[in-house]
Structures are given as structure tokens and as C-alpha cells.
Image (cartoon, rainbow, N blue to C red):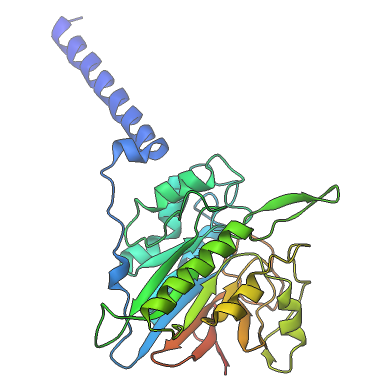
Amino acid sequence: MDAAPRKKREETEVHMRSVRLLMALAFLFPSVCATQQVAASAASLRFREDGTFRIVQFADVHWSWGFGKDWQSLRLMGAVLDIERPDLVVYTGDNITGRAPLAYRALRQLTAPCAERGIPWAAVFGNHDDEGYAGRQRQMELMRMLPHCLASAGPPDVDGVSNYVLVVGASQAPDSPAALLYFIDSLGYMEYQGERKYNYIQPSQIAWYKNESGRFLERNVGRPLPAIAFFHIPLPEYRLAWESANVVGVKQEEVADSPVNSGLFAAFKEMGDVMAAFVGHDHVNDYIGEVDGIYLGYGRGTGYGTYGKEGFPRGARVIEIIEGRRQIRTWLRLEGGVQEIQIP
């Protein structure tokens, strides 16, 4: 056999092995093999000229392998965004599952509808996100590499990963804070009286929230800015919300809260800025009720790759903040892109 063709063939095989290795590394170690994306600027959030700020909440997407049920979730998220055209998307935990083999690929696919449409997005973690190979801190590092991400880990001396606040600027003066969005890591599991139970938001997180709230209160000359909080696991007060005289929506499973009341709701009342909080976790609850002047609401289960109920279509919650008022409007956008449930 002629030496020249054999040498060329060997060089080609070496080149192809190198290409395959680099492709594999790009999936496994994206921070090494890809140029790091710059996270979107939180300063880009501002009220529209009509005085509204619209948020779409995707709850419990449970993205896994990236095909089958995940593609149903993808189509639904894209349809919702095309109809609602939000200013911000919020993923309220259990965004991916422990079955997701490659966290970076899963997160990139999960947030692709936002990337394709240029929509800023934020996220908190749920109890299932870090049951795979990538922990919370690593996933946050990966999120920060993705286009239009506004999420951040938060202070290192505060429990959890995903404790941060975003500011929404005024429509006519974007550098002037007009509303706040708090994101809090409701953690995962704990041992309680010898059993595995859902964890609770820790004292360090509540202290962080109160400190942030107080800082903005002082900056705003003693007037609390209207605020909304997002986390994954509902508070015990969600039971009171269901029992309240002012409740809309359905409850098809028990509130899966922690056995320990963290005191976060009491902190909301004390600081006077949070007017509503939204969670996920319970996939077939979607109600919103009022407790002591604060609305406590569920998102709508979004992901097809997890449990649901027949006759309870997947969808998303839409939240609209009204500039200059302690007022929100909210509704559900359900699968098919046409069914809407208004909630006054």
C-alpha cells in the first residue's frame, strides 16, 4: 500500500477523533470550551409606557433528556411567549430533574424559547433540580453563561443558591426603582422528627430579605416599593389562602409545605413591600388567595414530563404589575395557546 494515502487517512482519523473529543468536552465542560456568555443586565427591566410590567411564570418544567415530553413542554412555552410577549420569564424551580444527563444542555434547551425571542429570564431552584450530577452552585454558574439570564447565586453567607432581588425601573425614568422582584431559594429536604421532609427558608435568608427591603425603603424615603416574591415550595400560609374569602382557582392536592414555619410571611407583613408571592411545587394546584393583604398564588404546572391530572391542562401563569400602585393582574395561559382564565 502506498505510504502517502495511508498517512493521509491516519491524519484524518486523528483529526476526527479530536473533533469528537472537543464536541464531548463542549457538552461536559462548557465553561472551558465555549466563550462565556455575559448575563443580561438587570437594568434592562422597566415598566412599559402604558405603566405595566408583564411576567410569565413557568412552574415545574422538569426538563430531562431533551426529547419526547420535553418537546411538548418546549412548544407550550414558545406558544405562551408568542402570545403574551412578557418583559420577564421566571422559572420557579424543578426546572430540570435529576434524570437530566447533562445539566448545561438541559438548561440551554429549557431556556431556548427565551433566547430565541430575546426575553430576559430569572430562576430559583426547587427540590429536584440538584438531584443529578450538578449541584445548585454549578447550575447557577451554567445559567449565568446562557443568553438573557438575570439569575444570580446571591450572597455566599446566606443559605441556599438563588437569593437575589431584581429592580424594575420606572417607565419614564428607568434608573429610578419602581418595583422589586425577590427570588428566594426554598431549599430541598431535611430530617424532621426522624423523617424526610421538605426544608424551610432559613433565618439567614429572612435576614437577607429584610436587609434588602430596608435598604430600598430608606432609598425611597420610607415608602415601601411594590414587590413580588418567587420561590418553589409553598409556605404554610398557603392553606389559609385556600380558606380565605378571596380565593380563585383550584386545589387538587394537599399543600406540600415544610412542617416548620420559617416566618417568611410574617417578615413580608413586617416590611410591607411584598404584595404577592408565587410558587410551584404542587403541580395540580393553581389557586391564588389573599391573607392579611398579601396574595399567595401558585403558578400553573408547565412540564409534560412529570405528574399531572387528566382534564388539568399544562400552562403558565401571567402576572402584570401596575406602575405606581400596589396592584397586580394575573391570569393563566393554558396549552393550545388560546384558553385564558382571568383572575381579578
